[in-house]
Length: 167
Image (cartoon, rainbow, N blue to C red; front, top):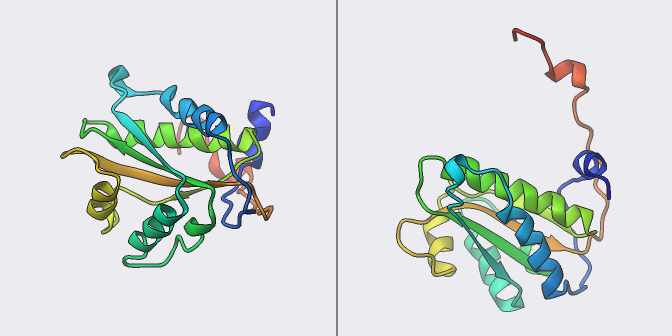
């Protein structure tokens, strides 16, 4: 898939087929995160891939506090928990890595959904769940699966979000 096609066609997928995603494909997706832009080349991120169905169900339950925005996580083939060392730019670096993961997955025909991190009440629980070392920050959780839906969401036209020289 061509880059600009991947960027313009990627959407959050919340319904997955029961298909398995091979380990080498998941590694390729996560490897795209490793190549993300990073301040001072700190590369502070870590990627925990969860494929065990019971653990995916447990992860979903942990994300229910305070809302139930990830009720599809148990149906995913995998989840990538993106954490980062607590560096000055951990959120920027981890977000860049997450975006690369989303685009790589889409290019390979894998649907994803970025499940919030960082500011959620469940962060300490997720960090404990993946046995992250002390001081790690949760950046995101990315569900991964073979899409069983094709979401179509419109984005604003370019002329609504661009200006030149001044806002």
